[in-house]
Structures are given as C-alpha cells and as structure tokens.
Amino acid sequence: MKKLSFAALAGVLAVSMAACGDSASSGDAEDYPAGDITMVVAYAAGGPTDLAGRAVAKQFEKDLGVSVVVENLEGASGAVGSAKVINSKPDGLTLGTTTASAISRVPTIEKVGFEAGDGTPIGVVTESPGVFFVKEDSPYKTFDDLLADAKKRPGKITVGAAGAQTPQAVELLRMGTEYDTEFKLVPFQGDAPALTGLLGDNVDVIIPSYNEQVRAQHEAGKIRPLAVMGPDRKEYLGDTPTLAESGFDKLTYGISSFIVIAPKDTPEEIVTKLEDSLEAALEDPATRKAAGELNIPAEFIGSEELQQKIDDEVKDLTPVLKQLFG
Image 1 (cartoon, rainbow, N blue to C red):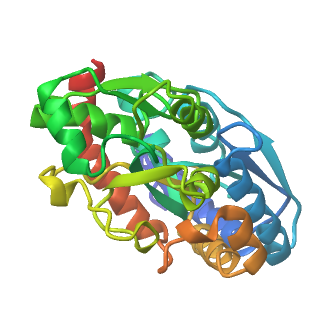
Image 2: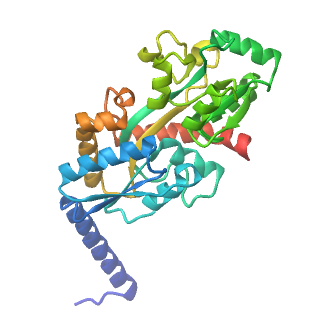
Image 3: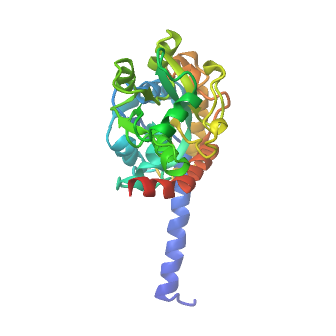
C-alpha cells in the first residue's frame, strides 16, 4: 500500500473534519432550537424597540417551543447590544432586536466591535419614517414656508432629533452639506424628550419617527406634519409631501427600522425557521398591537430583502457619514 505523505495525510484529515463540521452544522440546524433563546434588546426597557422585541420574543416562545429570555443591553446607539449578538455563536440561540442604523451606520462612525453590515438579518418588525413636525400654532404652515426661512436664516432654525446620529438627524445634516439648506440640529435622548422640547417651545421643529407618543399629539391637534423623511407619502399624514417631492431627491434614508438579527454565519436553515416565526409573529394581533401596528410593513421584509437594504445603505451613506462625523 502506498504511504501518504504527511502533507497529504493532513489534507485528508482536514477534508474529513470539514465534512464532519458541515454535517454537525446541518444537524444543529435541523434540530433547532436545541435550547432556550436569549433575545438581546439593544435599547433601554420601555422604548419602542423594547416593546417590539418583547412582543416578538413572546411569539417565538409559542412558535419554537422554548423559553425566550429578553435582555436589555443599551449603549452606542444600539451598537453594544448588536455587537453581543453579531459576535455570538451562530447557533440561533442568541438573537437581537435592534435598528438597521445600529448595524449599517454606527460602525462607520465609531469602533464598536463589528463592521458595518455585519450580522445575519432575520427581518423587519416595524419601519417608521421621520416626520418634520411643528406646533399647531407655528408660523410655518407648509414645508415651503420652513425652507424659505431656512434660506433667509441659515443655521438659525432649531430642529430637535432623538440623537445626533439617528437616521433623521443624518438626513437633516445632509440638507446642509448637499443642498445648502442649513438647520441647527438639537440632539435629545430620544423622541419623547424631543417632543416635550417642541411643546415647551425649546425648539422650532422636531423630526421624530411616527411612534405612539407622536401620533397621540398629532391626532390631538397639538402638532402638525410638514414633510415625510422617506421615499413615500403616508396615508395617516394626509397630503404631507416627502423630502424628495420638495427637491431633496437623495434624502430617502430618514427611516427608523426595528429589526431582528442573528450572529454572523448563522446557517440558512436556522434563518429560514426564524424568518417563518417572525412572519407569524407579525400576523398575531397581540404582537401587532405591542409593536405598533401602524408601522408594520404591509408586506413582510425577510432576511434577503433586509440584507439588500442594509447593503445599499452602507454603500450610499458610508462616504456621507465619514464626511459628517470623521
């Protein structure tokens, strides 16, 4: 019998081990979930991401037949909790509820332990465009009124946002750098404080996502919408125009997307099971109510489509973010 050289033997062993690894990975995916799941919510308890994450976790328990423990791990605009998930073992037992911007934008601005676009997206829970809102008694009756004053007084009109690096804040800054329409950004610690700031006359305008608190003030007639920071008009905002319709054709990224993610290199079979569970969760009335039914996409956005959205955002916005934030 011909003897194998050491190098050849090593090669055979490597191939055998790889085959065993593939088999084990496949088996793990078929048996998924093999234990309880931890759902890391990358923001503070009580906020919209937390409420959405807990609602989805409850449905996952019912659908997958295991306990789903929710853990809030906030910091770095959602990147701390996202990093824990992205860098966990890819067995589907550590999942995360975060925002698309936490994994597509924040890593471009800060060192957070992963690269922009890392992780395995499962699907979108809710999508909410930012909206330019003013108080009911504001002198700005239309978005054109606001733009005209911004041209006369560049950098003087104060605009409150939920943070300095949110999707809405970035689009506002781009209005100055790319369209010569400059506002003064005033970052708050979330949409609720920004809303309070507007009602208290501490800022002229706010650009929150359309969450339940904002909706309540809008429906009560306390605030008025001037423009939508997304590619499409929204029925619940009547004839409010989009930024693109108002001449800012490239500004379509001012959307807060709450998403479910899994670690890097999660097997496709596990991703498919999680996609199916998430889609079922978003059809459940209790989940829809808790997550905010108004902002749940009419058509389910799964892993592949969400990955494409994230890739497009990374490609289009990375140069902009580096220019704005160094």
